Length: 379
Image (cartoon, rainbow, N blue to C red):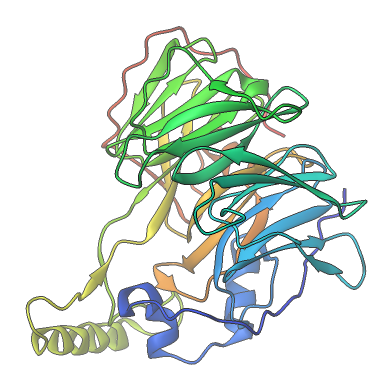
């Protein structure tokens, strides 16, 4: 399948983040050529224009990769990534209140608010072809996430009775709206959860640790630091997200954009700026960092070349992946959705070769309770 670069600029920017959340935009004008160059340098493509007002909060590719759902501001959209004009339609529902999921290539499920001020939240199911929407009631206050079920006619919902209440995972029968516990063994109170039915895997994040379970609830391993995990469908490579080491909000430079002497001067300037601020003022930020575990040997590797969050494997093409961009090489840029291949990095680690921006992690805390999975060829 041809991988397409979708060029789309969204003019609506309803929110202004805090300074640490917008460092790249705060200290330098947006330069499309620099962002495109760094994306190409590290084998990733931008899905949207590099300098648009991209206030993306969530995204999700359809299983065939032909369409992408994304939320920008308070509105959800679906873009036809295979169309020459990248036709984009507005999802005809109230504002989404959580992450959405594709039930199949033509049906999208997302949580939305009540029909009336005092009514319950709802699950909206949008049929792309007919543009029809039907709703099912969700009797819970908070619905931060919808997940795709392995069974047709179902959706999985992360819910809680209040934002500070323990999260639980429920299964909804879309025909009747009936809800039941998704897994008897899964306790409430997790922070994140992803499910990969093809790899018999449930990844649960709690308090900076991700636990890898089978669908039956057997523990396969635990990983720290990690806030969210996602296992590749072939079952070998596990992606782990975590908050990276703090960096200055005043001193962020790509690897090749200045000499060593210039870097020293910039670092001193950043220290002077930070020293003149009140103690309560934030001077550093922890970028969302991506890492990967080879489940054949437990080795864990960190990406230092590119930073992002909401990582997901791109189903149509083996070992391609997508995520929301934070920045490149420790420098923050405007948010975007990235799409690119990971296979070349994985092959390098297999044969013991260095690969730019791939660093071994030595602080992995792992507890494996079952044998390693069988070898899987990396394509």
